[in-house]
Length: 519
Image (cartoon, rainbow, N blue to C red; front, side):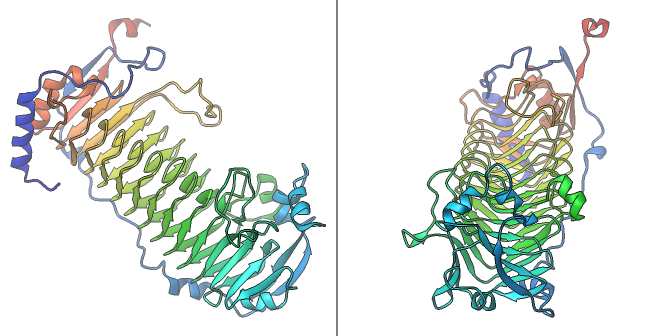
């Protein structure tokens, strides 16, 4: 990948000599309704200096350690443990409130639903087990515990599940789950969904079948360190697997709870409906963890979360959708040094008005659609990623402006190395009213390599503007040679002359026709 510049350009020149025409388009031609095509484009060479960027400054991760988590545990005040009814508990309204939601737990508990509560101070899980009747929580083998009721950490509670617990099993049949409304520390242990009838893990069977889960509410802190969580979650709100979620706006106002936060460090998540989900969460850190063989998503931060750090993780084998996705105003966050591969759809997705994010130094390969996908999300920086051997496009940008692609390698992808396009989504099921966007695309591509991709190195339809500089495009896979698609194909000779022979920046800008100016 690190070819000498002279070798790059000699290889590229050889490829150009072979060119006998344009490669076929990577996508079906867009209709007039889909695209507002400019009639003509100008090709020029602006000064290179404005395109220069220093490598991005990454967050310092040195403070996010197991030792730092231990220092956060306040054991000075002994908490209280009780078993009481789930009814009228604010932090359980999502599961026991109106619309007959409580019927699930009446059925599973064979009576009025109850839960185990931790309130007003610190409780060690082993000590908790000694204060609860054995029919609700018992040690089945040394260090192995089976919980048959939900466990709730109250607003002023602190629950610590540590290495003294080899494994905590949450009973599927009895409807056990974890809710954190205070502070939860899970360290050096395993917490899994458990199917008592099978005497084994509650492996996924169907989307609407209850499985245990973990939910942390607004104002909480959740820390999961050097632990395994598995066999969690199903297709019901707040019950996805490991979820960090704000209360509803009315409850936020009533309870005065801020945004939740926490850290996940060095842990593993497997066979979850969602490996990780968050909603209106701030400053959450997911570091050096593994998300494997989860059902819908690996890591899925959502609505209005911000300043998230997703770094050093390995995400693979997601069965239905993407490895890592941030969606709907997930802003000002960092996704770097991750590996995302062999996921059913894309490796990394930035979606639905998520802006000011950095996606850097990730290795994204063998995903079953695109490597990196940006949908309706402008003002993002994509830096130094290796996007290799994905089945469709390496980097796909839809309806997004001011996308800066610096020093990325997009190699051996099935279709286009970098594909930019616009699309009319008015007839889709996406919530356009809540997520307005402009059907426009603009890109700055500086440095890096677009090599050996199946259809073309680069294809852009109807851009507001495109700027290219020092982009190496090598080793075309088609016998016709190296070709550019979309509007770039019409002006390919000029573009490559500036970019390759003269080694100058290229600016592609639309020009209004006389008819458009009259309109």
